[in-house]
Amino acid sequence: MTMIQIEDTMISLDLVERFFHCDLAQCKGGCCIEGEAGAPLEKKEFDILRAILPAVWDDLSPDAKTVINKQGVGYIDVDNDIVTSIVDGKNCVFTCYDADGICKCAIEKAYNEGRIHFMKPVSCHLYPVRVTQYKDYKAINYHRWKVCRAAEMLGEQKHIPVYRFLREPLIRKFGEEWFNTLDMCAKEYLGA
Image (cartoon, rainbow, N blue to C red; front, side):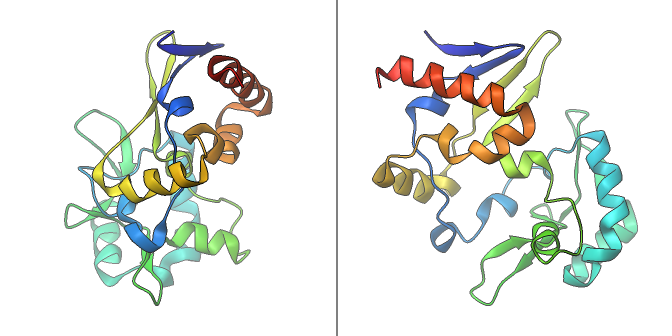
């Protein structure tokens, strides 16, 4: 078996075989800073981000505000996908930093403070898992890169598979029944 199929999704076994647990103290939120483009957005999320912008505006950097004033909260990237705008080819415009220099999400901060009812884009919530839509199915893959090496090591220490660490966002995206099926398939595959 090279992948698990549930409904119209094809799930890489990396989600089951590999371990992950975010370690913000080590990575400092690098996944919101590094990369070639902003975070992928669904069309409805793009509209939501425009609507909630006033609630998060004061948490954004001056450079982010300049970018948003120029091109908006998002743009179409080279793959023809809607993504969040970025500052200087790196930072998502919605990044903010805490007192320890850890990059955080201004959207999630506003959500946690009860100022808005939208947590953050689902692609951000799912990270390091990426969903790619093809004609007949969605590919669910684990995106591995150096920025998340500390998270892989912490996940190994805690023995938390990628899919279990991402239980909440996977349920948000695909539903609880889908997640329970994945969990059952993973346990069967691992012989647990």
